[in-house]
Length: 173
Image (tube, rainbow, N blue to C red):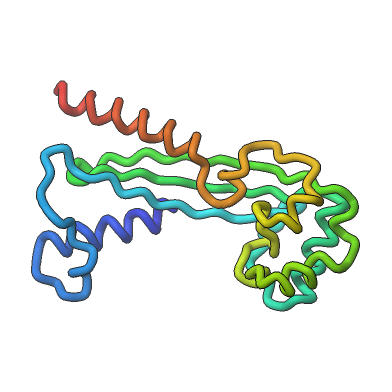
C-alpha cells in the first residue's frame, strides 16, 4: 500500500508542478488551505501462511474453498494516508479471520456462485464474504466484515486521527 501511495502521490505532485499530460488526470482540482489526503490500500488473503491470489481456474477456486473447511483463511489489509502538501504519512495494518463451517467444502459452492454471476475468479481466495451463498457457510469472523471486504473502516478512522495529530504538531512548530 505504501508503494502504491508513493507512486500515486508522486503522480499527483508532478501533475501539479508542470503541464505533464501523462499525469494530467491526477491533478488536484484546486488549491485548498487544508490540503488533501490521499488514501491507498492493498489486501491479501492468506491460508496456512500462503498468500492466495485470485484463482486462475474454477478448479483452483474449488481447491481454495475446500481448504477453508480445514482451517480458516485470513485477510491482511494495509492502508496508507498521505497529506498533501506536507507529505506526512501514516499507515496501518488490519487482519481478519473467516471461520467457515465444514459445509463450505461440500463441493458445489463455487458452481452455485458462478451460476449466480459472482466474480469468483476476480476475488483473492475465490470468495466474497458478503455474498448470501457464502454467508450461509460462515460461522464467524474474527475482525470486521469491511476489513475482509478490503478496507477496514476502524483502521481508516484510527489513521485519520493519527494524521490529524501529526498535522497539528507540525502546525504548532
